[in-house]
Image (tube, rainbow, N blue to C red):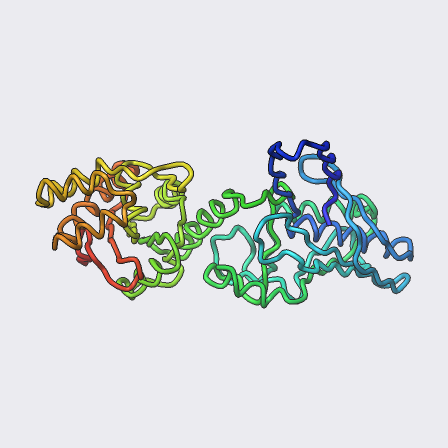
Length: 381
């Protein structure tokens, strides 16, 4: 359930009028829900009264309210509260998660924060969190402490707060947590407290975090893949590299390269299919389909350079997709030649983007992700 005000009712319109689609609902991060549960538990611990709702402050200062799904109290000893995460219209694997906070008094002042069942444990460096500690990021930690501090004077009294997420370990299997060294559950995340539906920001942040983890473990070569199929191909091609080196970059090639340079990496391998590579070859490093189109003139030029006859070049120029051009190259028996030219063009673009501070390899795979079609370096050592 969202704590935002309900949307205004649309006025009655004639049957022929077009109604603007409703905006997608925002939701709440796991960090926000954990903070809300912690404050509800703190209130119950202090007062001995079961809580049914709670209000907390977001990092922006905005205050939002949440229903409390469950609240149990052992007066004077412990209290536990549950807030159910509503991710809005975002396809979040933690939507519906029961963020649970269990609070107990402790002898010394301040807040001691622990991770319980379903909250991952940090086992690798590069996340900005203590090894062996709970995967609860900095902003949620501050939100939890602030929310509890609104109820209990932490300068005078102390509490231990255990954040847990039933089924969190199962949810984590659908994330890249294990690869980043977060084992046994989900991460408690959030920077603003609010989940923006279908936001690219979270994916971009996860890509940057993955590159940082690789660097922290001493890795020097990053492998960027555009999706699951290209990652499968990349792993087969580079079995010498550790799992953490492979990052599903999506549309955030530029962001990944910037972090790779900042962290001192020396090499990057990009594995993709024809569509993404064509966009990169044109210098478009944010390759989402709504923000960029296939440059068929570029493909036609590569076709001419590869030796296609004029009629086939003209056909490529009128192709309706990069896959269409790929199929023409294949039909003409020049797929590998044109593919190598495409990979070389992409490698040049990526090298120039990083001021030639990274050694760049680029490979084109088929649309199943099983076969290597061409490479800028033929995967030379």
